[in-house]
Length: 188
Image (cartoon, rainbow, N blue to C red; front, side, top):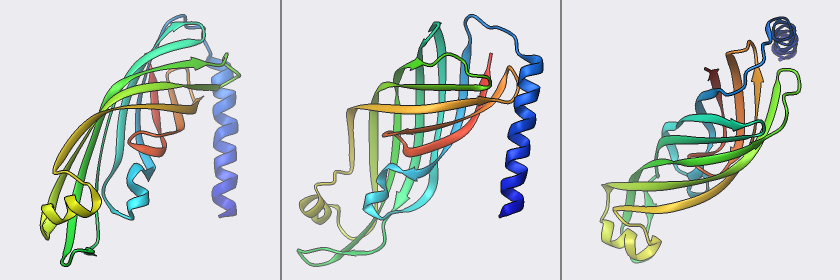
């Protein structure tokens, strides 16, 4: 564990030096982010993750400290066999997808770091596949429908660390496809 921490610190230090040596000023750019979620949105349902929360976004810098973007995400979770109050048991799989727009206010670049936060609006779609039991009993007890869609409004806060002028990593906290996400970022 100590070795992993030491290697991580060395890697971040070297990337800081590399960034400082190769930094060039960009006026407008697009950040393309591909991420994976660490904490699925449906964690409260105690579902097993079958497909981890995956996300893809593109943020276009419109002004010095403002960007507008689009994003999409997908995850699949599955419940254990649950005993229902009305008798019987049920087990289901939830395929959840999200697509929307987001806007962010960004801090000024602090070396290789950029901190940002903003709001998003998305269409969230959930599809339930029954693996065991009857959907009617689950609908009555849990209020779950076979498929449903709704508009979802959310906020997020995140940071991007640049390894080079074009390659970096990002991390975000927010409600969407995952409560915590991280991944790679490509600036074009």
